[in-house]
Amino acid sequence: MPLWTCETCGAQFPAGDRPPAACPICEDERQYVNWRGQTFLTREELAQRCRLVWRDDLGLTGLALEPSFAIGQRALLVPDAGGVVMWDCVPLATAEAIAHIKSLGGLKAIAISHPHYYGALADWSDAFGGAPVYLHADDRQWVTRPHPAVVHWTGDTHRISDDVVLLRSGGHFAGATMLHWARGADGKGALLTGDIAQVTMDRRFVSFMYSYPNYTPLNAAAVRRIADSVAPFAFERIYGAWWGRNIAEGAKAAFAASVARYLAAIA
Image 1: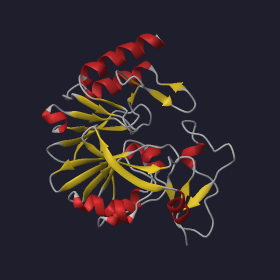
Image 2: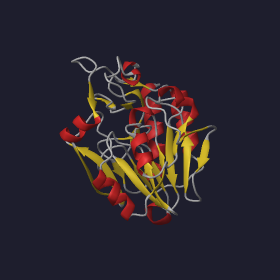
Image 3: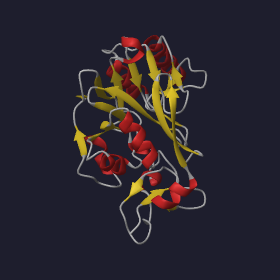
């Protein structure tokens, strides 16, 4: 029986002879149901529609579907001892992309910022012998294809290695997470934010939303919590959720200025 992928958010669902009746991620107020109604593709149909490409994005390898599919995020591969850590996920795993990651040392772990980017996490884990998938426990209800490799971590931080730590910031979702990479930006530190702190189009600031497609802002308390979660960490660079949406230098000062600007705007 085929596996099913939501056409609007890219979440994968278990195998069945028919698609799911609905996608709970899209029915949530932070997302939306396709204007044509809830639609799903089989994994094979998705592979026929899109290809998975990879290229450099400010010193990290990124992976994304072309043409863009669902939300359109790209995953990032963070080099670490024993392989790479995949930050965020995409809705499709292909043999060519798997082979490329093996050439980089293999996939040691997957970490995902929030449910909109869960994608084909089970396929990616299976391709690398059950690589652990780190999701915050506060978001466990949103996992659409449960898998034994999922690690529902708790608390405000979770260390994957000496150089890679996950930060539970909340905001966009209760378990919304960012990744700090100590060796990033030539040892000055990098923060991988997904759209928990979204890099703006001028690439000088970040901003915050409860729902991006429905234009619902976060409240002041949530934004202050996000700021507090990153305050102890040094970072020169921020990587956002899409190709090129990065702040290349001076990122910690830019983050602080962004928080101040946002709080002033909603006051």
